[in-house]
Image (tube, rainbow, N blue to C red; front, top):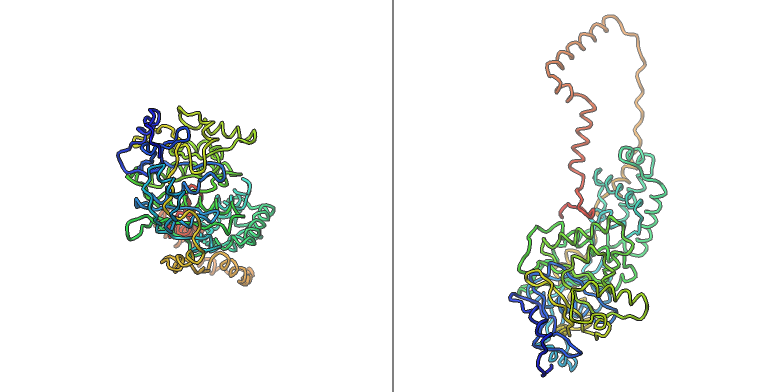
Length: 528
C-alpha cells in the first residue's frame, strides 16, 4: 500500500465510486504502477441487472474476477450462476489458502482478507461429468436453439420450426432426440406429406441433413442432455439457510470439445428464466446474476433471427431482476446491439502482437468513455489481476474510467478435489430429483404404435337396386319431415348438423388443447 499522498487525478476517480448504497468492492485505483488503497473502485449492487462485460486476453485473470464478484454477491444474498469451462471454478465452495502473495495483494488494495467459501451446487449437462444432471426436453429447448446446436442454415432452421409446429399441434411430445427423429421420418412418409399439405412441406434433402446432424449429436454423447426429468431453472434462485446466495456452478470440462452445445444451453437457461420470472423493474439487488463464459461462441455463425432473439432477451431480462455478465476476450466478439446494453465493464489486459491485435485494441479503447488515461498504453501494460473498470453509478451514469488493481478472492483459487466435489453432489437435495433419467411415452412410441395398427379393410359399397314406387314415396315423406325440422332449427341448426362443421370443431378443439405456445426463442411456454 502506498504511503505517498493520493494524487488529485486518483481522488477525482475515487469520488466517482463513492456510492451511498450497498456495493461490491473490486479493488484500488492504479496509477503509474501504484495502487492507492484509499481510492476504492466499486459496483453498486442495484445496477447489476444492467449487465456487464468481463474481457481480456487468456491468462489475465478473468476467471478470478468472476470469482471475486460472485462470492461478494453470494454474501449479499444474491444467487449466482457460473459456467466452469476449464474446471477451475469449483474452488468457490471452499475457503481460500492464505499465503504471502495473497497477503501482499490485500495490503496493496486495502482488503481485509479472510478465507471463506460459498454455498454451492454443481451441475453437469446430462450427467456428462461430475455434477447434478441437467436436462431439457427437445420441446422445451425449441427449434431456434436446436438449429444453432446442429449448425443448420436458415432454410433448414425454418424446416425444423415446421417440424416443431406440427408436433406441437398434434400432441406429439418431443422429449428426446429419438422423438424428433421419429417425427421427421414420419413427415417424409406418404402419410406425413399428406398431413403437411396445408402448412408447407419438408423436403427429403433437408430432412436428411437434419437427421444426419441429430445422429452426429447423439454419437457425441450430447443426446444425454435431451430428456427428462427436465431441469427447473427456478432452482438457480435459491439461497442458503444462512441467507447467502447459492452459487450454481455448471461443470463443463467434459464437453469442452462441444462448445456450440454448452453455449447454446446457457442461452436456453436465460430464455427459460426470462419466460418464468415476473416483471419486477429495478430492485435494490438482483434476483440472480448470470455469468456467460466463452460468450463469443454464442454469436459465431448465428442466424439473424437468433441474434435478434439474443438482443431482445438481454434487453428485457433486466426487468425480471436478472443481471448478465458476458465473458470473452475482446468487446468486438459481442454484436454492437448487445454490447450497448452492457453497462458495467471490467477490461483486463490485451496484447498487440499482430495487426489484428492492434485493431482489436483500438476498437476496445473506442468503447470506453473519455478518460485521462492513455487507454491504449494502459491496456497493453496491465498485469495479471489488474483491469480497466467503468460501471454505472446509482443514478445510471457511467463512472470515471479507472485502472484498478483487483482484490484477491477469499475462496479457493483453483479446483477442489474430485472426491469433495462428488460428496457435495451426493449431499445435494436436488440429486434425488434429477439423477435418474426417465423415458415416458412420447412421439416415438405414439408414431410406432400408429404404424403397427393394421390398415382398415375397405367397406364394400351396396349394389344399386331398383326402387319400388311405394318405397320411393316413403323416402320422399321422410325427407320432407327432415326438411321441416331443419327449417325449424334455423341456419344454426343446419350448420351444427353439417358433418364438415362437426369434423372441424372436433379438430380445432383437440388442437386448442394440444398446441404449445412458444416464446421469443421458440422455447416452450408450458410451465413444468
